[in-house]
Image (tube, rainbow, N blue to C red; front, side, top):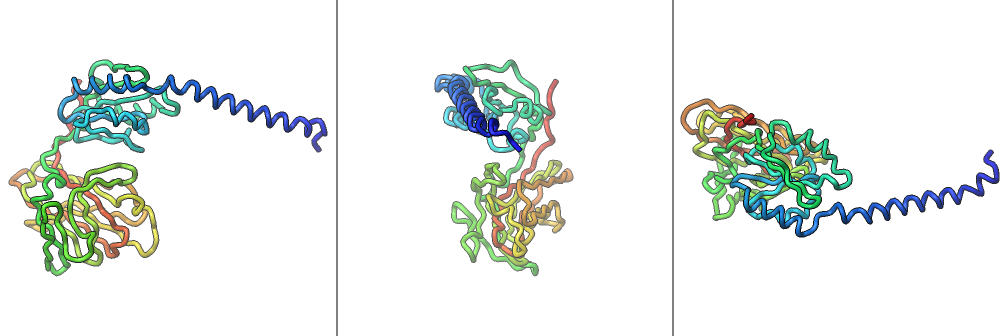
Length: 316
């Protein structure tokens, strides 16, 4: 049994704890302005990027949630920053500028570097502008692109295909290939989010049943890696209700009908799913990019197909 003196002292202990928390919170907020960049700091970084960035460069934010920097980065330089972007290959970019605020609370610089540094090499010394740091890296994960479906979509032939081979064309109206039927059945490049990652990808909603929504592309060069990337957008991926069905994304060789790539996205599987195959040397080919799911409900697919060269590696 607790003594009366302890019970009398308990409110004072609680009050002391609250005062301590209040003082620590006040100290945190008083120190915070010194850890935040000024507008002049941001503008100095922006001027450096304007002077030294090359076409194809990208900026990666560290930590990913330090979003205000986007307002100052030159518009011609793409900016990446989302939950998980530390691990992004940024394969489209030969060089990456890391725009960091390592002094922010919970920034975890060691964790960031452990994810970011493999296959990358620093170019020169980092620059400091107030609490901002700007460091340039050669991206050894860079894979030059020889074909990108989102860029070639206007030249595609798009149609709904039944199992017996019957086709219903989806005419191009200058902006999208629109199919007969529900308004969501079209093919066009759009910005969507797949598990926090913003991506410019081809909207290709599964039509439902045994039909496939197909986009044919000509001129895919041989001897390269053919890569399929895609998934279910927003919050539609995670539900696992029994009424939802697996979505299949695939690429076929239009000439032979051979299956080149296929990815299955069952209900509940989030994130970007990827598959790649090495195309044999030889003449350019035509491929059929397709999606299918028995139940079209919440099967909002966004995907891309790329023909990429091998990773460049890091020069020593």
